[in-house]
Image 1 (cartoon, rainbow, N blue to C red):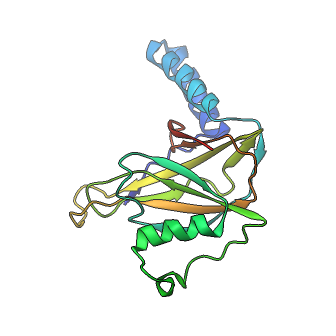
Image 2: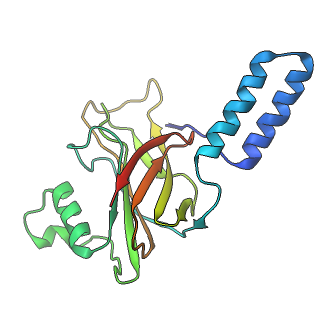
Image 3: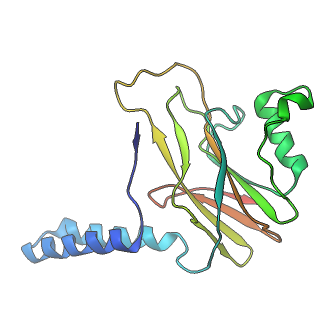
Length: 192
């Protein structure tokens, strides 16, 4: 499996910028476009705000076959988390829900992020950086990376919908949650 590992941080852009400046000295016009593209992309994800500590509590290959495109949801109660797992596990009684992650919702929240339907097994959603959730006022920005099977990998031909659940300190009065990919492209905005 291969993760798209463009890690959009300042050192990546600085390295790219240094390389592109060298190319500019040689006279490459295309390099100038690449420099401005890097600055535009890296500027999209908020550079200011409070970094929110986060821990991955679960990751699954099938989360919601109803969601065909990327999504992000803020869960703030045991009832919301249980409802999610009941839906995913198709659980009919509480015995199926005994091994769920324990979350103290008095002091914590859970962000659920998924990439929508995929045509086979082998896809995953990973939390992009440890602690890469930014709170800016009433807004939360979360970045993830998606992993897809390499060409030639043996995969099951089955619809999957990978997701990741990330626990954070309690998030209250949140208006929007934005989900970004590893290239710092905005995937989806969810209002709460």
